[in-house]
Structure formats: structure tokens, C-alpha cells
Image 1 (cartoon, rainbow, N blue to C red):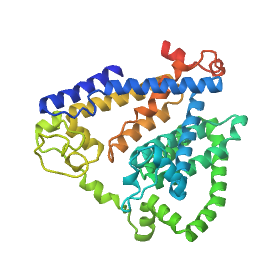
Image 2 (cartoon, helix red, strand yellow):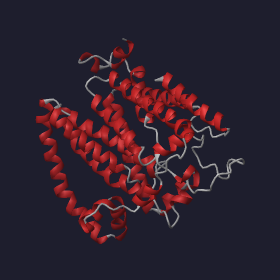
Image 3 (cartoon, rainbow, N blue to C red):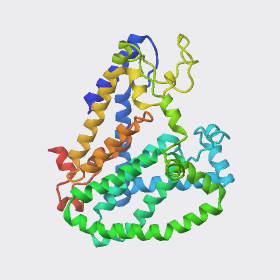
Image 4 (tube, rainbow, N blue to C red):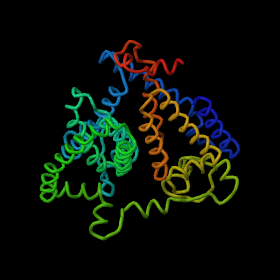
Length: 380
């Protein structure tokens, strides 16, 4: 994993050196990787100090709680002017752009647009896996809370960023795959899960529909969040306002050199690079925000393939540390490559705490008596 991060950094360095530019966006990625790893260790160590132990389930619960909090903050921020004024007065997160009349997007505490959508999507997959694995009678009492959290993040998360929908689809797909191919005992236990979900929707949907019909702001946000579904019902086609924008952003290199090593530009060089003489485009370099396009223009196929191999190795590392939990990590990896079709992002921030959890975990945790601990797996 470390070797591949260094190779990716070298690919990016080679690109900017051969192109004679100074966009260092990913040149020091190996350092960023270590920053996230140590941050992940700090989080796990703190959680262990607070709870007396740390495990996959406990860490996942904290990530779920953070996303629920972000969605709640976004609702407060959008509906309580005093709260938004207070938060915007001491944290800068592009609120002038987010609050502009043309944009007017909901945002939480450092959570907005596709960055928030990607994080919400990842946590929805983890939440779905957590729900599937609840079998103990003591833990089943938390199912209602998990389902409510899933629905809350799904609705509000899509109001913040429709990228969240990718996580909704993948998380439901994960539960479906586990139901078909998973452990038979858990499959039988999942029937009560589906019953509870159906009961919640049976009660909650009429209330939401009533509020939707009587609240103009909620109607506007709901139609934005699930625009594709409304279009499918009303027009018979999946039509989202950002579809045409995304299509126009699919731009590919027109020469072999760029395909192989890139142009060395990740951000828009216009105005930032005094030696840039190319055609002006709004937004990012070449006017594209598509992840695959941006990586190819920055460091070519050489860098894109190396970065892809790095993410695959990260997933393999996580899978090796948690026997029986590989399905959720492969789902997170799939999410990473799917999101790249819309925006450049880095799912390593989600993997990092799970990879570092064994270092912060006590060998004497109760879970170790039931199954081989991730620490022992790593040490072996």
C-alpha cells in the first residue's frame, strides 16, 4: 500500500516535471496517506479511551452518528437563520457560493456537495452491513434506531448532495446480495428487519407526504433530492438537471502524450499559472469535474492505473484484517470507482480508520475470545 502511494506520487511528479508546470495536487499523496492513517489511529485511540474498547461495530456507530449530526446541522443551517449566521461567522466553507441565489445548497459542518455525498454513501453501506449483522437479542433493540438513521441520511443526504443516491443503491444491493449468498442463519434473522422497515415506511410515508403537500420548502428540497424519480414518474424518463452538465464534462485528451502522462494540471491553471496559454474554460482544467478525466489530464493513464491499484490494495488490506466483513469493503471500493464517473474523490479517508483500528485495539477485548482479532491477523 505504501509502495503504491509512493509510485502514484512519482507518477504525478513526473507529469508536472515533463510538462513544466507547478500543480502539486497529488505529488505528495504518500504524505497525505500517512496523515489520514495517523488521524485514523487518533480517532480509534480516542474511541477506545472513551468506551474501554474499540471494534469494527463501535467505529461504524461513530461514523453513523457523525453523518446523522451533519444532516441535522444542515437542516438547522437551512431553516434557522440565527444558527447559520453563527456557524458562518467562525468557519469558512464556501458559504457565499452555497448560499448564492443560483446555487442555494444545504450544507453541514464542513459537509457539502459531492464531498458530503461520497461520505454519506460510504456510511450508508457500512450502516446496511451493520444492520445485516445484528443477530444478538441484546443488539436487535437498536435496529429501529439504525433504520431511522438510514432513512434520515438517505433523505437529508440527497438534499445536500445527490451523490448520496449511489450509496443508497449500493447499500440496498449489498443487503440483497447478502440475503441471497450470505449466511443462512442471518438470512432468517433478516426477515424481522424487512418487517420493521416496512412498518416504519407504512407509518412514516403518509406523514412525509402530508408535510410535502403543505410545505413549499420541503417540496422543493424533496424534488431536488429525488429529481430523477419524479421525472421518471411524471415524464417516463430519468432526467436530472445535472445530466447535461455532466455529459459536457466528459472530455478526453486529443494526443498520446496526455493520455500517457497527462498535462500536469488538476486544478484550473487559468489565472493561477502565469505561463498557461491554453484556452480558458470555467471550473476545473478542461472544464471537466469527472474524476477519470481529471486524473488522466493530470497524470495520464499511468497515474490513474497506479492510483486505482493503490485503492484496490487498500481494500485488500482492509479485507484481510476483518474476516467475514470483506463484502462491505469491496462495496466501498466499488463506490469509489462509481463516484469517479462524476467527481474526483478519495475514499481512503473511510478506509484509514479501519486499517488503523487494530493498532489501537486491545488484545484483551471481549471479541477476541470469539474470533481471531484483527491485530493477530495483522501481526501474523
